[in-house]
Image (cartoon, rainbow, N blue to C red; front, side, top):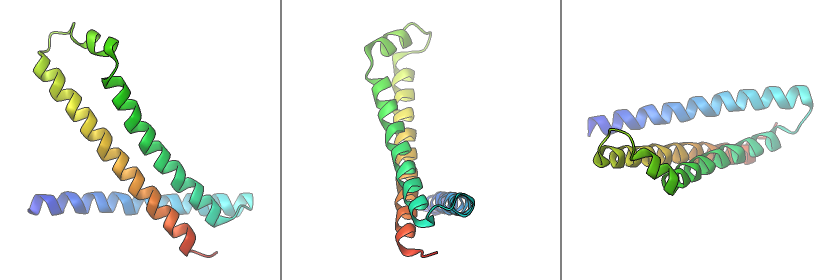
Length: 116
């Protein structure tokens, strides 16, 4: 249980750091380019969510590609190792999608609540 909370704390710290850096960059862009800060944050949040979804879709299409699977079978690895690696790739892709989607959602919610 302790390991779970340590990992959760690490993920939350990464999300907070990403959001703070994003807000700083959006503020600098909106200040020098004279854009609306809320719109800049909203589109950045949507971009983060889009990056997460496209990353997940990209990994799922590579695993569903017959030529990709056939070329992997020509290596010296066993099929068990290939399958294990495929599941690890899918799991990490879904973790990245969740991370980026949650970050994007929080940034979008902040864009509606912050008035500058």
